[in-house]
Image 1 (cartoon, rainbow, N blue to C red):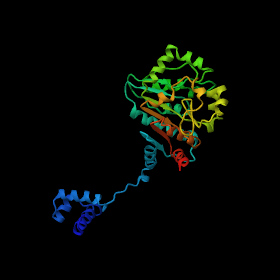
Image 2: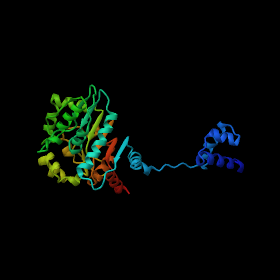
Image 3: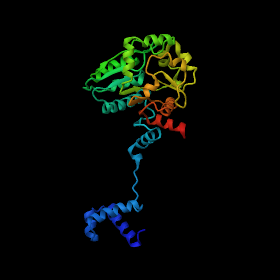
Image 4: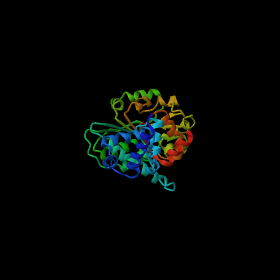
Amino acid sequence: MTSENDDKLLVRVAEMYYLEEKTQSQISKELGIHRTTISRLLKQARTDHIVQITINYDLAGTYSIEKEFKERFKLKNAIIIPVAKDASKHQKLSHVAEAASVYFKTILTDNQIIGFSWGTALAEFVNHLDTIQSSHVRCLPLIGGSNGRLVSDYHVNTIVYEAAKKINAEALLIDSPAIVPSKKMHDELMRTEYNKRLADLWNKTDIAIFGIGSSQIADKDRWQNFYGEYAAIIADNKGIGDIVSHFIDENGQQVCSEFNERIIGIDLEKLHKIPERLAIVEGKEKAQAILSTLKGGYLTTLVTTEETAQEILNFID
């Protein structure tokens, strides 16, 4: 324990340094104490809680909620974008996609394999990508193409091709649909030399970039146009959301096993092993699906809006 005089000295040194904004050298001269002792006393003042330093994270915008997401869901990164609530759906997605493209530049290196899913978030992401002079990078699809009449801009092959152009990479495309009628057809397609090569590259993929689907938007045109005749069947299952066409429940566990055996694409086990898994997603209606994905540990980095992030937390609180 320190004596009363010792405590008074600690308080006085702390007061001079933190409130009067004097340097350690000035304090040393005024009190006749060696400068190294002043440094030790300041450290002791913090240890004894005479000085308590607080940081107002709210002044940093979304810093506190990003920190909460990283800690709660064990993420490598959480990028939460403040967007005006009256902004249009496209404006919100555009801001999220732009932030994702900026982050992507920080993790892209030469000799990497980058895997992509399909959808509006991915298409918007590619639109915001700057031209990058990478070397020996390959871009490839993580899932087969549309089973219906999906707008070509959202097709995985379009996304892969446009991304490859932006980052000076090789593009590998896919000519198989995402879902085939039977497991037998799936096995036959996956035995082709080209699809075997893709499957091998999925095991070596460094970065996976994907959106997150929600059962709450299953009636939307994009959903119908991607899954075609399978849309109605998929909508009846118990899945909360989907990642690269694999459906998960509220706890992040995979459901709809019959479809899983017919999906031409990376499976969730392999996806889980990819070092960087970047999810680009926006929308309060997708909050439950995003939460399920977080619970399943399928992503390492989340990029979304502040209102979407808050809605996710609302489902927990």
